[in-house]
Image (spheres, rainbow, N blue to C red):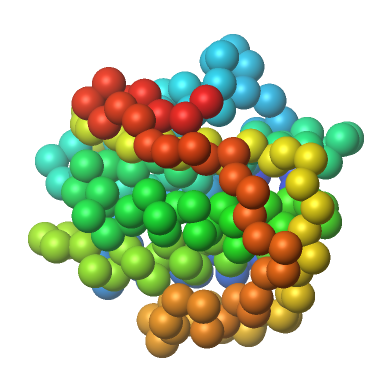
Length: 211
């Protein structure tokens, strides 16, 4: 298992390396394991959320003891340009990656970029935002073993709807900036707002979230 698994074939090597570099530095400095996966379909699972939870458990992201894991799963059909993105968290990440932050990541970074077919850039920007917040996790330490186990999961599924967005996209820096940013200083601004397909957060113990 690497930091980036692009089974949908939507991330070119340069963007993949940028994402991988952010994830690698984050784990080395904090012990938080952030993984990005793209797939063309959620099958055989009923929802992207179910797929993400299954991957999180199978791969032992963040280690079973610490639960310092973040999984970003994007289900993208390259032929149609449609997709959904799901963020699944280990229990230790819940205090720092909050529902409002996940909504912000979806509304500012994933939704507008996905609408323009810029999947790799949207995922990179989302990873930088999540990595920036993850630096505040308590009790992290660099993980050396991938252990399997069950945890408490919080999953937020972002469905790409029929809303129109006008978004000023700034060119990403060649260096990942999460260590020096405050939220909103890097990404530029969206116009038109995020109408949302979030609703709210569910579950926790059961792993249930938005569908």
